Length: 436
Ligand SMILES: [Zn+2]
Image (cartoon, rainbow, N blue to C red; front, side):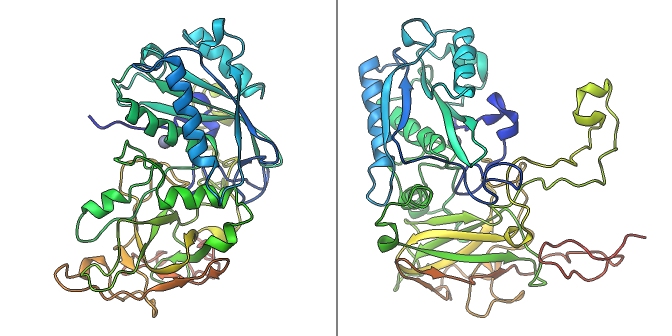
């Protein structure tokens, strides 16, 4: 059985369901800071409270100590400016232990009000079976209160003792859920056109949506937490690759494409070291639902109170999260160590929910490597001969510098528009023509 690590915001706050590659939540014109991630205010230590119960085979003391180690793994990276403090047992429940669904609801209420950020230990799994009902889910995290100025005020993580996890596995779950707690979304390491290798598996980040073989944070995890909370040394260690993913017209942006970078490695067929990866999702700062008027009165629901404004199709209000800046629709950025890299675009085909859109939008063309003469007809994944060295143009990154314009024009995508619409003249990909 595959074990899934959920952010499961649907369960607790349906409005927070949309994530983004890199940051979990991005501000919109009406909430938070437009196009910027929601983060904790790191001027003070992040305060959390810990369930006083056991966690499966772990005693309360062991589970609490392991949790502190997981917090430290994220906060003590030299490129990260972040600290966290255990301020005591969970408030508002008997002996500081969440034992029942009623306890859980009470603690959720005080988290939503910003009173506390609880770390809940479901000692024997009974809460998970009642709240989640899916035995493959072994943890979830939800932001509880967000501020208008773009900060996470409170959040909660919930761990199950009912899945026979070893201590090492529980430690991995803690690392993963605390990544969400600090504001990270799920992440993927890229898709090798010649099949998943042991190197690809080694590159799986702790923020992958399933339990990995990782004992700690990978290059991608470290880069993104540092990007969210950069310390004074961030710019002496990390640079950034930025660019757009485009349809074959070379203009229209494509959202929700996985863009991954791997270090150049000469003398190998792959031409890259796939055991290390850094990745981003195109359009991660852009909303998954900009809102539009065309279906606002489509399919009335009965009773009318059963759906917003009385119609199933009403999404005129759009999402509370994500920018509406059209220049960000296909934009990606990868915080990455100084070095030389192969950059690839591939589909988010991994089953996990990642990026602004849910369900995931398939890549509209074959995956491919970026090259120095990007066009709609350059070599792509489908033409790679896995027995000969790949022809890859590498991208060089320097610390403290942006390597810009690593734009990827996807090969052989379908035309963006039909014959009834005029040529696209906007970067947002909106047709300027009129339907007959
Ligand atoms: Zn997760």
